[in-house]
Length: 206
Image 1 (cartoon, rainbow, N blue to C red):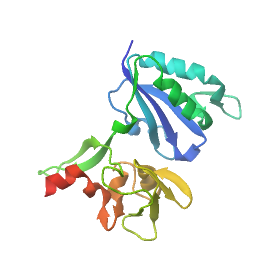
Image 2: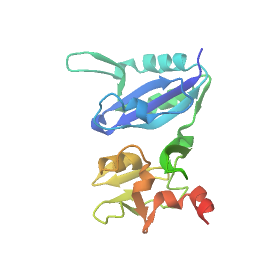
Image 3: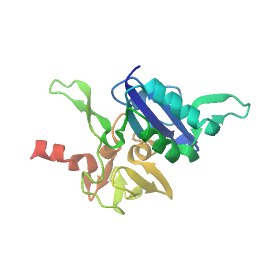
């Protein structure tokens, strides 16, 4: 029996599929998922703490095996499932023994510079629109560019851009921000960088 995380992750390069996998790490690392030469980064859509992650993953995979993706040459892709099952699979996972959903307490990484000029990654709670008091329907701008505006779609991190829905970090990556820094670093609201609207940033700099 091993403790770990069961995760549901989406990749914008193949949005019809969901990756349902596991890790025995104590935190979810997107970089590890995206190291397999895939064209876009994976983004988590649900994460569960599990007392026995091997058992939980096996139960979920077995329960939804009819949705498992097979390639055109009928190769089975073990951890990829058709996205139509995702809400049912999340509900099923929540009801399993020893499982706790932690989707809304995910952390994000931002690159910082120490007093000696050394680059380091700092892990902090995810920036959400609710945290920084940005209402639904608000306009935010990539790099404060009026030609690259997105519309806030929920209280967490969903935005609409050119008729499509993305997480903030997905869209930042698509628009050229890259994957190392949080999407809230690249987007601005009313002329201010969203990252700098965080309460922990304001407390530190006031």
